[in-house]
Amino acid sequence: MLRPAALTYGLSIGYTFTGFLASTVVVSIAELSALVPLSGGIIRHAGYFVDPALAFANGWNLIYSYLVSIPAEMVAAAVIIDFWSTEISNGIWTTILGIAVIVSNLCLVRVYGEAGPYP
Image 1 (cartoon, helix red, strand yellow):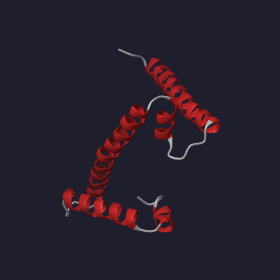
Image 2: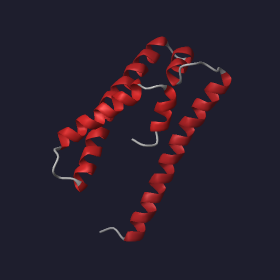
Image 3: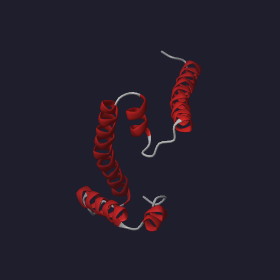
Image 4: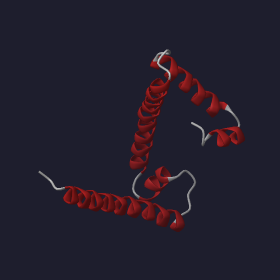
């Protein structure tokens, strides 16, 4: 059985290591952007520095990520709402949140920017 101190140290070491890896990726992207300022984000950098096929794959991976994570977040929000209000089905809350996401994306940039902190 693990002692609580060993668990705390292991979590601290893992968190520090993961934070270090994430920060190196962010610094690398910042260096690439400073070296060659391209419009279009990391996908354009992948096409410029490596190969256009990598940019293509990176773009489709990003789209797939959005197609999976946004509905999952809407379902998670519906489950959280269901904690307080159990009379309405989770499917209805998911539909309402999906419509809210679509409407906010169809609005002007100013309205969309104001709605960002209030998902």
